[in-house]
Length: 242
Image (cartoon, rainbow, N blue to C red; front, side):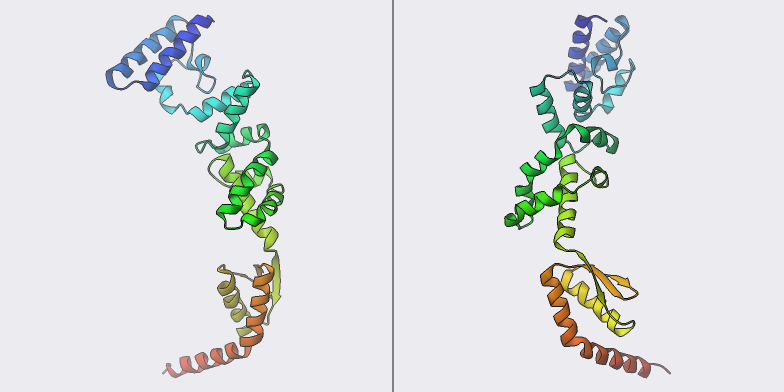
């Protein structure tokens, strides 16, 4: 394989990608003829492309896939490799399988350290940046693959979730079946803004210390009133029957 032929092919491929109308069509014909004349494939020009001489395959080309292929190929000098990884971290069109291949190449702890202040600030909790860093270090690769978007976005979402669980542990709050349990579920939804999970012993919910104190205060103050409201509603319902 001639290096001059490969370089010429890459230039024609660049013309095809940047061209429009007749210019693009002409570049495509020249590229196809060049590949055939030198027994080259698109893969020889760019390892992210398939082994084919069909120029139409370029329609599916993605810069992020090309960058990933170049990094995985191991031929980049260190500075170029670091720059490519920096760009890949924020590439939002990587497929799950590509993200999985990218993960071992990225220093997630360093990425968390760099981004945690911004994540905490955006969440209105700038003073808890260190807590976000701690939460991020508990994130596992499987957690990232469960989300979507760029690797950075996946890491952010997984970190936010880990931080929420860290600061809002799941708690079992006991209540008797019937009206007490239903009242508890309503109070939890009101205080946290999230539905609780019914449990045979009451309900489970993620609460921070302040929310837990508020729930307990509401239960203690209004439990009897809730029982009376339920009884009144039952009687009113009875009056509607014939």
